[in-house]
Image (cartoon, rainbow, N blue to C red; front, side, top):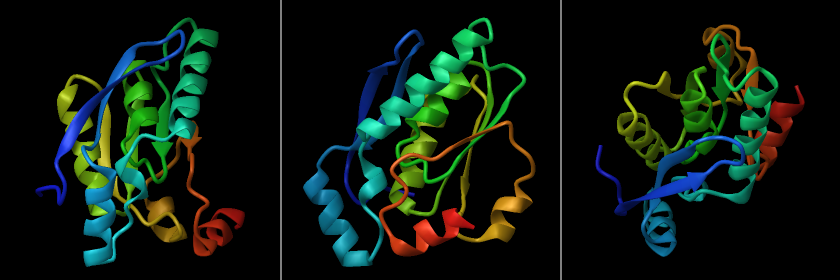
Length: 159
């Protein structure tokens, strides 16, 4: 799948953790234009501050466990660029990074491909659908940042 807008790598230094590479669109304006044309969601096409906070929290969790998340299954809902997912994978977790938007899925696959030795799987998921979420199985850690920007999403998270 080709991105509607070109992507650029973004290296993020995680507090007391690794430097993690993810990808975001090169131009936010181009991403918004593409979203207007095809009705998609452009918000996951950039790395937001809440994703950095989630990644730092995962690094803190790893520090409390001797520096690793090995043995943990992590699910990120609405992963966007996948910074939290890529961080958890770099710290040894088995990660499933999910999103529903095509642009985010492309960016997530780029991040997963950039570090193939890490345990990061990318899946399309509408997390407002309980059945789809349940079908993924059990996880030790659930990550969701900057996901409450639509009423339907907020209602689904409330359930």
